[in-house]
Image (cartoon, rainbow, N blue to C red; front, top):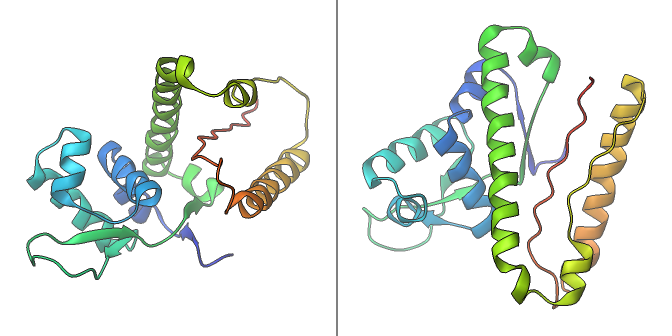
Length: 185
């Protein structure tokens, strides 16, 4: 497993992450870089005290750390420690607490997708044609074995990593939201 992927080992770690605001805070730190509790509270419309509490919880379980940037001691900057978070779905499905924690994360991903769609639709008239052509949401219903679905995940993420590396210095590259699912019906 890569050093930039946090592998959650137990339900307590997962439950520490599986709070809607904590998921948003970690996502913002990953996407936008280091920030203070005040900056994040403004971004998410929360109070600084609550935001600070949730940042400390994320730090307690190793999801974030102090950025080590100079500044006022009370204006602590936080940064994400890992690029991605992963977990063993079988282990999490083994308890009611694990299943609920995973459900919180899944619902947050769906809410993120809905927000991304609204933001895209609001900005669509200002986007260059090539971005409109490349953007989209799709769905497929296919028949696969669990082995094939796992293979699909591995190849998908490997290909995304290749494309990210390829486009790292491209001047027309933008942050792109990619949310995928593979759920048996």
